[in-house]
Amino acid sequence: MLIKQLVVEVKNKVGELHNIVSILSKFNIDMKALLSNTELTDSGVVNKIRMIVMNNELAVSVLENEGYKAYLENVVIVDVTDATGSFTPILKVLKDNKLNIAYVYTFLTHVENKALAVFNFDNNEKALKVLKDNQFTIVTNNTIKSRYGNSELFEERNIREYLSTIITP
Image (tube, rainbow, N blue to C red; front, top):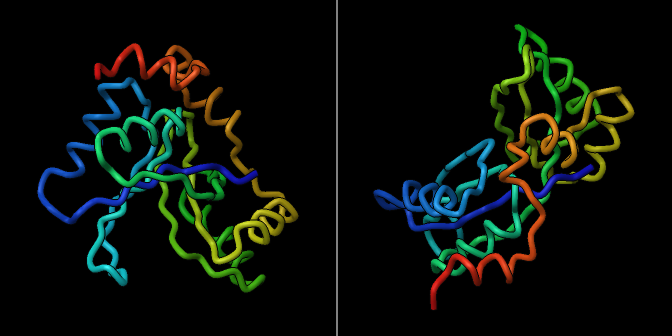
């Protein structure tokens, strides 16, 4: 299953990451992972902040309301045992199947001996199939919610109704 990841594009300037994280915190949006990097695009240098958060739609809404360019993109998340060499078999399967990794980042979890690897590929669907076919554990939205979520912060909400209660005109 492909997971939606939050992406926020900002100018590469001091304090932008702080502003984004502060906004998410203000709205009780639980952030599980973050990657911030600078990319050269046709329109110049852009900083892309990629995050796994517990309520993507709300995050996009509140960030757009604050004037940020925020959107969702598909990623593949794989369970990785937190032990020396455990990432190598995943990368070998990807190499053997000629799958190009656009980017990857990993993070440790509070689940004992587990890390997660967040991948974006040139072909996410093909990568997902190859990883499943090779018995790697693919993380789903339900996995993230049940294993890593703070249930009181991950209630499904009518976003418009919720925003109307916390944003004053």
